[in-house]
Length: 429
Ligand code: UD1
Image (cartoon, rainbow, N blue to C red):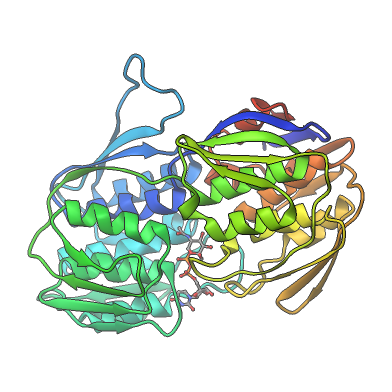
């Protein structure tokens, strides 16, 4: 299994191109199930999760073709893929496929909307808390689907098609909102989604669905209205930049010091995180090309942060911020409100010398002068990358084991960091 070896202590200087967002790419790919016509997605990141979803969609009959590189094309731009769901050959998503990635459960919405039935295994994914699907099921029921749960599978039926309805989420859920949007797009009549997630990826998917002929308004706010249509067509859509990748590299630069341009991304996608970085002592400058992030020799200031749905501080940057705060001059507090049990990086960061105490949802981080390299391993995607950030600042050598978690969500991580001066390499056994 691959490992990543880092020798800490190098400052980062240069340019890091930001890839298309994983969390938009996955629902956009799933949206291809809604139409018989081809959906072309540009700026698709090269990630293990994308390949896994290609397999899952392939099982339903979706033809996925990847466009070859055009001469002179920007090597940093993501791939262009075409997804064609002309015929759905199977409405079952089996355990073997769905258990590897939680977002694949979302196929249930377009399948029941277009085919009148779907049988999808309960999901797997990162081991960060219980992550139920009750709200996704509630949304489908509100649109007239009949739900049965049998032997680990959720079976949704709507033989006469879905009908518009009111969905009031008791808690903000990204997956629930994606599911509701895709189902409502093809339902008969008007649907209203209240307390909808406002994450930029929801807006990106809604934009794409509208290009396909859907009638969605209010995406990006807490109240989305969807007027159902009888059919959707194909379109071409470029995936928006990955705000979590952006924030992760911004934290890496804040950690090591240096000056890096994060290219092809936008500050409005992660303003809350950029504000925290400025508070911690980094300089953030929006430019025409992206975001410049710099920190000179002065130390890091501690911060007090609580994760929240967008536009709040994202839970997907919580582990990275904790790594950063492990070297602040003073005591920081980070409270995780989205997922219980999303503190598995704490133990591993401690192996590098971080001083972190956990009390329920809150971690108290007492900054230390130096971290020291060690062997570490992580059990989820964002936790793994927090160990990379810590390793970049730790004295000596850090080896991050089980790199496949990183490959699920970060494209060319070691190449991007090495190009800015990090001493980082992948070791394949
Ligand atoms: C998505 C993101 C993930 C991010 C998370 C929160 C993708 C592919 N993944 O995950 O990276 O960390 O949003 O920003 O986009 N919940 C329920 N019942 C449900 C569904 C969710 O109780 O039926 C709870 C969850 O346990 C959690 C909260 O709602 O406490 C938010 O989860 P949700 O927004 O649904 O996360 P995902 O869509 O799975």
